[in-house]
Image (cartoon, rainbow, N blue to C red):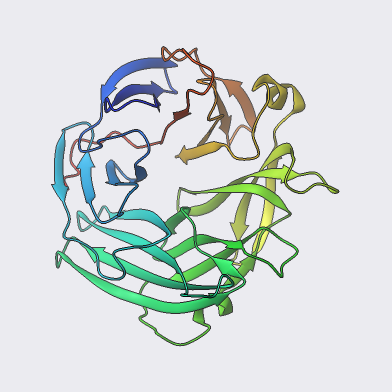
Length: 309
């Protein structure tokens, strides 16, 4: 977890012994960079042009800057994800670029680019145009399938949708993204995607029936069979209220069987064990809130020594 500062350092939480450690983050320059992780490797990209992409092992401090991805240099949104192949000791990095079509608010140009550490090159897997939807900053890879959230710009009853894209294929076929569209389990204020043991898990804010933009709770779902959502749990109200005034958007990430939820306005961290179905507050984080508009964020990674970027 780290906070609004240009100092690239923060604190790492070990859920086994429930202890926080001071931690320096390699490569990251400011707190609002985008982050993705898989099996000990962590990817960072800047929040400005989204073309500076680094892969690092935060434990060994080894890092590598990737070549600049193809596609538009000036974009509106981008989402970053990565996947490690342990058997081959290789990894892939994907970036989904989203750019509003010139002169048309309801159309958005989407391109998906994939980097392979084996060839050390980028390939463009998909280019398509969405109508009534745009891309965002949420994506994850599970079992060679890239999942990313899309956001309604009008004409849909739901604010979010999910696209599932097989990364082994390359296509510029019009409409390919909406052919792999998966509705979300309910109306969400926000959604956070994560890969837990090669299963797609979403943690989402549940909107009120009459005011879907107002959060009333938080749920956890897992995607079954590539199409059906199974509800795993809903956050008990005592924990939901423990965050104080929770915004309609919040941070959440996960690793192994653990899901972590935090408010951007507080250093409080709530954990959920997928196996035990147990919610629990972490030990108090050493990061303290010093001014009202101070923001906090974080990500998960699996500490490993043998994985190199």
